Image 1: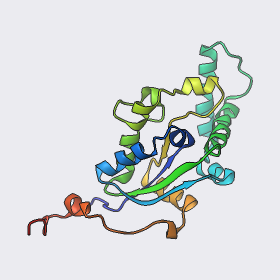
Image 2: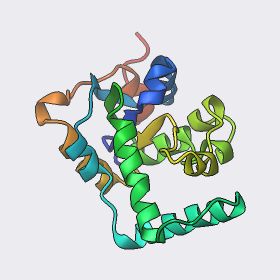
Image 3: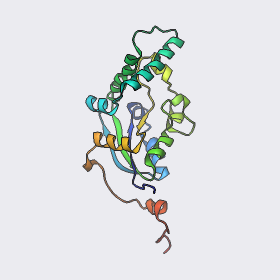
Image 4: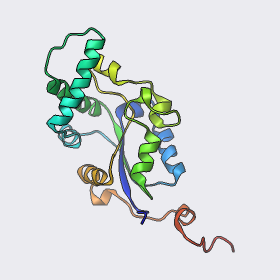
Amino acid sequence: MANKKERTFVIIKPDGVQRTLVGEIIKRFERTGLKITSLKLAMLDTDKVSQHYSKDDAWYEKKGAGIIADREKNNLPIEKEAIEYGKDIIRALIKFMTSGPVVVMVLEGNHAVAVVKKIVGSTEPATSDVGTIRGDYTIESYSIAAVDDRAVRNLIHCSDEPEEAEREIALWLTKEDIINYRLVQEQILYDVNLDGILE
């Protein structure tokens, strides 16, 4: 059975705020029928960003191996083990995510996590589909970020799975930050018989 109240978590990153794309990004989500239940401008805390992006050694190794391959391709020296290059990704993300204001939000609706992921696009903007937020609004790539030794500026974070969304929501927001309310459009989206449309 569909979960009409599935929630997902989104952060419009500092580059999205600085490029004044907040309204455009929110509009994309709202036009699908997703409901905003929490929205705020914030400066992120370093410790919470570390918790948010906590990864295991296998993740660090895999990502670090990719960086080493990029460095070899660009004739750059290999100065450390793959795991350390992988950890550098999170270090750079922490620096980036705390560099300026972000917009934190919770969106709710049927398949909210999957719908937001589809709208946002794949993590690397340069290979993200046209029509997605990342594909339409930036030309950033993994290789340029790795060569420049910085975080990928891909405008937005979104949860990958419903369980991850709930963990992230609990990390960043209190229950009081989330408002339960009904939108009139929910009748069109979810009401079986559309009772009450005609007078």
